[in-house]
Length: 96
Image 1 (cartoon, rainbow, N blue to C red):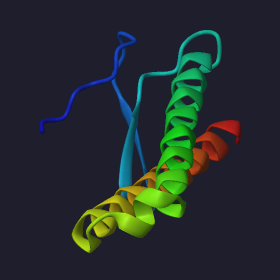
Image 2 (tube, one colour):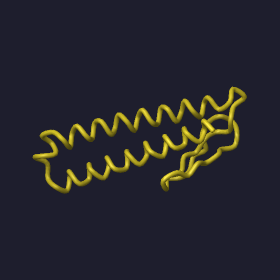
Image 3 (cartoon, rainbow, N blue to C red):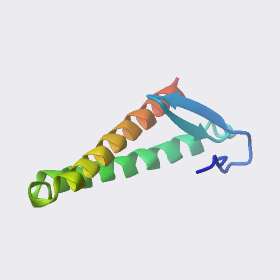
């Protein structure tokens, strides 16, 4: 898909971490709290996805599903872990 500028009114800032680009809106007068809140939501979503996929793969689904389906779910899990690591890195950079 295309690139969409984050809402927030100002020009976007992009952080590249672990090969993923994370677009942030321009800092707000409140010190970038909106950026942090958005990244925290992204991190929570990635953690939820990781928990769901891990549970599925460790359970009956992982044992009984066709190997191609299990491999696809493992790829999704790896991508979610990479996303989480990138978001956490972006959060650390914001804290500096």
